[in-house]
Amino acid sequence: MSRRHRAKKRTILPDPTFDSRLVHMLVNRVMKDGKKSLAYKIVYQTLDQVAEKSQKDPVQILEEAIRNVKPLVEVKARRIGGSAYQVPLEVNAERGTVLALQWILLAARSRSGRSSVLKLTNEILDAANKTGGAIKRRDEVHRMAEANKAFAKFRF
Image (spheres, rainbow, N blue to C red):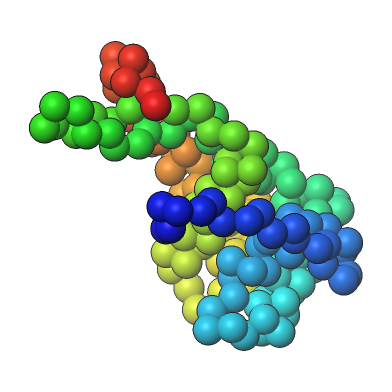
């Protein structure tokens, strides 16, 4: 990260099918090695399966899953006087969405099974129902912040 200038914020355009910025953010995070068409295929098949299993709008289910996984606080390491403290900080909305997407994908990739579409589908449905690996991760982060509440005075 450059110390000289702050990176400019790029605007994310909505995806062509669902006209949703959130879906496009998910596609960008699913993508590996610049294979965006493959990422689109995976995400669209996932959203089709989500709609099939839940009988609801898949974008609304995805938004609900993101809302459930989004953390309110996180801990950041801060060095003070030679020792590192885990300082709890509030998470702004955009960073919360990014963290939620990362955690959902991480939990989906760590699931057992072969099909990435099926793993991502099940993780999104679990997150919407407040269960699964991503929700566990959020609770863990909240517990860490609660345990280190005494160091909140070191906020920067």
